[in-house]
Structure formats: structure tokens, C-alpha cells
Length: 292
Image 1 (tube, rainbow, N blue to C red):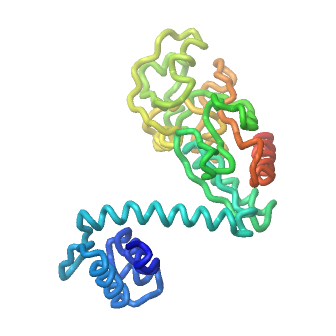
Image 2 (cartoon, helix red, strand yellow):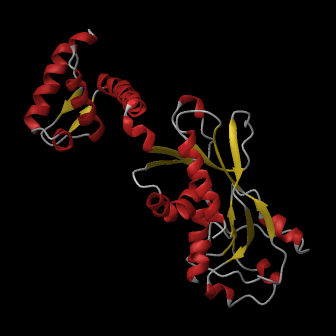
Image 3 (tube, rainbow, N blue to C red):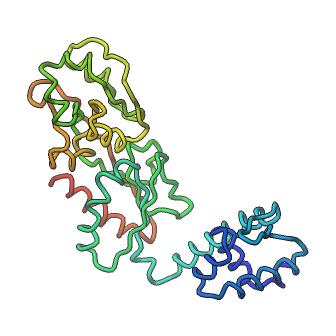
């Protein structure tokens, strides 16, 4: 039956189902709402099933419609990838995977510099805490938190040392006289951080830390909470650089206490592949950024 269905009809259905609106699909595809409606009616007739439940105010997917949407979305995503791979523009498309906090706090503010240095390059960024799988061709480079374990086919570049120290708003810092004041002030925990409060307390012979007042699963959220005066975060000078430079955050024990230092982030890309050159350009640029 598939060969009897026009691809345009499936495309119209996918847009309307994804957006939940015939009118929105019409705007996206530059068609009239009536053209959208007629195309979907014909598709339902050809398939012999109803794809949408219609009321005077809205449309919603039937079970059959939801099933078709799942498969159609996957099919169009695969088609998009194929077009990118064979397109002459693909050589100028850099597909990045990135640790979320690094993407928000470090990469995003600096991307204009990379694009200015490399005119014609397009960058697409996806962020998650998982490591990228290069075997499926989804990504050209990955900025990861923690050294990759499976690195046989990868070039892995450490991105320099980070200093992890307590930081807080200037107002909260005015209430601190000594490191032991941390025992009575609200501490903010970054759940996925490799260095935790217990490490900093041990490094400064302060004994066990009190339980944190709040915790976040992303460093950029912990940084933002500290900026808003909710407590004291134990964070990387790299991830909080903008806030430290602007004065929104300060390090009350800088030069007084021992800080934790480590290499937190790495950039990885395949040793072979059509985008190896562009990935290396990006890795070299990112390495230089650490020196600034």
C-alpha cells in the first residue's frame, strides 16, 4: 500500500499531528488550511482509518494516528539525515553533542567567536548527560564531563584544569567570617559533580559537611541558585566564569582555603570520518578558549 500513498500526504499528516493543528500545519508548509484538511481526509480514506478526532475547536490523534505519527517522525528524521549526508552543505555542518551545563555556561556564549572564525560553518548542538554514539553518524564531536571510557576509535582532548570552590552572592558573602560559617549557611549541591562538598571540607580539615539545603542535577541550575542568593554552591570556575566576572558571584575563601582542582571536560571526535577535519578545527578552537 505504501507505494500508493503520496509522500506529500504523509508530510502533511506529520506536520498537523506534531503541531496538533491543521492551521499551524498550513502555516508551516505554506498551504491553506483547506488543503491540509482535504489531504488528510484523502489519506484517511486511502488507509481506511481515522487519524484525527475532530471537534469544532480542536483536533486530536486517534490511536491509529499516534502510531502513524511515531513512524512518520522517525522516517522523516532519517530522511533529513540522509539529505545532510549527501548534500554539499554537509561538509560545513558541525553536529555537536555537549554536556548540558557546559553547553549553557561555556559553549553558547562563545559560539559566535567560532562562527566568526569559520564563515560558512553551521553548528547544531544537542545536550544531554550521556556520551555520544558516533557509530550512528548523529554527531561529529562531543564535549563530555568526565573522560570517555571507550576511546579506542576516538581522539580525546582534555580541556584544561578547573578550580572548584565555594561561591555565592556578594550579599551572602558579607555574612561569612570564616570557613566554619559554612556549617550554618545553606549549601547547594550539584548532584552529578565529581567533586562534592565532602571533598572540599576534607581538603580544608573541616570534618563532615552539613546536609545540603537544596540540590540540582545540573551545574548551571546550582550556579543560578547561588546568584539568586539561595545558598553557597561548590562549583567550577569555568562553568561560573560569566557570573564571577560580572560580580554576581564571589569566592569568599579565595586565597584562604584549599580548592579542588581537576580536569572536568574533554572534547572527543572520531579518528576517521568525513567530518574529522571540521571536528578537529572545533577541538583546536575550544582548546584555545581555555587559555583565554
